[in-house]
Length: 634
Image 1: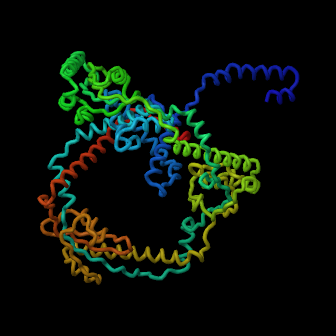
Image 2 (image 1 turned 30 degrees about the horizontal axis):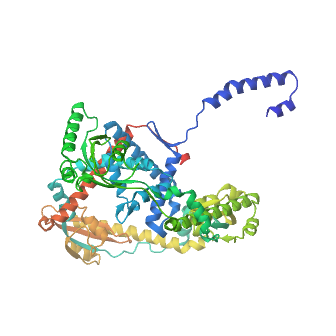
Image 3 (image 1 turned 120 degrees about the vertical axis):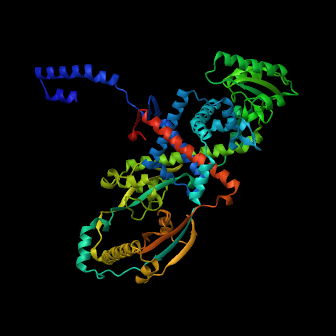
């Protein structure tokens, strides 16, 4: 810009203007550059920022979890929808609010709870037992250390600490259970008559009326804007794999990564925990240490399990005599690790202060580290190498597709010929999507975007899922247009006639209901409309032989008073109406409810009440915390 000004200006005006520009850039532009700070958070909860990376990691975790659970029915496109992203982010905000509340109120997750949770994960087990080697291998594949994973687990458990405490403090009385059962199993005697649809006073719809309705509701009779696409797809599952790796290559990889297949030294340990409360006073700490010293002095290999069952505060292991199984370095906290690896086989330690309290350890056995042979891990190496080659092949083809279609933006032919990919097409679809790749929101968004639709260019590479991507271009475009009146003439005529019948049916039902409320008998009123009365006794809230609309309305009406039924006119949602009478209400026979059903109901009510209380707590925490959401970074 300065050079352009210099070319056009000469003399002292140029000198003055350029001097002012230089001054401004020096004292304002550079300062602004230095002082500015680009926010990158997706949400800010108080002082805590939820980063884009954390948000994407959570999205990926949920995507993988649902994919594993739902299999072929999994819809990856759901995760591209703004409402799904906001729902996930709201969950992360709620978790952060609970974590901050834990910190403020001194709620802590014990190390033992973290260990028990990890040991119970089936993916880390072999024959139902926690396997440290499997644990470390799987974490390495996810590029995580044990400490990182333990922090994740601790954070996850921490978010449940307060909800679990609320559930534990929720008390459901027998009276509340009885009241719920009485409402749920209440019985009502009803009578009803379904009225035949009346003929409206004006049963003929004219062409003029249809034309007027068409003009007034033109938006309801539009063919939407539509496009059909040409596209090239690169799918990793369809790529021909390279030749299988040779044993020489596999051996080379085995030797270079041998440390991965080493079974670390393990120790079989039992422990007795004497808990020290959070924020304990000096007196409480002394009392806990004195108790731990007494136990340690009495403990022998012969009575250790009995003492653990009797005195340990670790509920997870005391029932197994304090048995923690085989442990290796990094699975427990640093103090526990140090004490465990300082013991000799058969020794019992003195009390060790750990974040959970005072631990007394008994080292029962030692298992030295061993390396798996090449033969044992050959299949694993083959799978890893094949997957790596497949990823490289996909990335190479996808990269060439992206480059070629970018360099030739007006056609897919050059890329198709260069890569040997067939040009595929889609049927016409609207902005609401279609079938095949047109069901993917990212494809629909690109298809109707300015660059592809208005400019006529190829799209950029669109990721459909793992190892599956497309480049699209518009093959055909049809603008939105109103359907011809002749095409919708009969449909509109039926709509108008249905409206008149529904209005006449409601008018008739309201008139008959008024007669019932004045004291006429249901049978006589129904007969005047050529309807018959049906009776149903002991109707409950879920009863398939009574129409749902009648059943629902029956349980909304008040109890009959002074022996007089309660009446209602009920819309049957098919253009007809029914007259309904509630003749009698009976409470539930609670003596027939089994104890097991009552206990299950009490548990369900506890969870439901606890969930409501937890949501109220979160709502209160939200109201007391400044929360900022950057939707443009999601």
